[in-house]
Image (tube, rainbow, N blue to C red; front, side):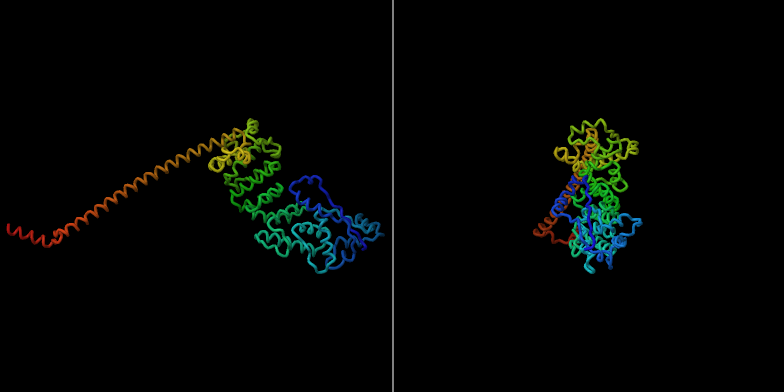
Length: 432
């Protein structure tokens, strides 16, 4: 070899405690990263797969002291390129070198390495590699979007490939890949696994919601948003919650999601619309909720709703929960664990009273409607019974007349015809 590539793998200590990537880190730690490669300039800077980066580096000779690019000059003098790389890119360098040393073999790319290889192709200026990576990503996302179970030759990962693309795109600031993955997520928003969905950052989730809310049903949106907020409530800012629950798109709140969204809206009210939900005192029982009730202004006036979007969101949630109280509230009242899980127990006493008062009013209205329908049904049943009795009387009377005629026939008088009766009647009158 006549050149050396040394990798400086970038580390991010602030991410080391991220539970979302725990499994990935455990798997990666079992495979050491090679950080030094002895290569040949002829393979890197010549041919149809040449690298524009290395072509420029190699063109700088050691006697070009006035070269403006000090970094390239240093590399040329040392015959060594030191490249700072993210971990996934460092792991993909062997694949990159295999591609550079081969004239015809296709790039070995997977969902996990695709974005890193796309970055490497761009960084080193290898256009054929860039084209192949883009083709793979396009097919991988298309297969996922069409729910294809066969990711055949291009070695895609299947159902959650979008999550890998979003995470890798965030690392490499690759907006185009992120947008393409978001489109797939938006089209399959209702089918995303909860464990995958909650691993998204709030910004990633927000990008998906922005696209999904145009075509997804409102009740589905409310369920998905509530689930995400419950899982990532420490990371959700009030303005994000309001953006995701915009009534122009989420005009209907599912009753199952209403209590959860009400809890988040009330917490946003406590903060006056600023900061993150994490800064709110997060109560997990009814006793804790009672300690914060004095700080919550939950007035229902229209003026307050207009001036405070969180109050308007609370009103929408209260209406959704109370109108379908059998689904939204009954289990919360019967089961303390469910009240804790749903967030009902964390609501202030005032808010819970508002919900239950509205629910009782709706229940009373529903009961009165049911009574009216019952009375109407009973009146119809009585009418039908009277009609049936009348029909039975008619049938019995008709059957009785027929029996009388049969009896007369047996006695002989029924054989007298109307004509003979008239003749007899005429004779009597004559004789008289």
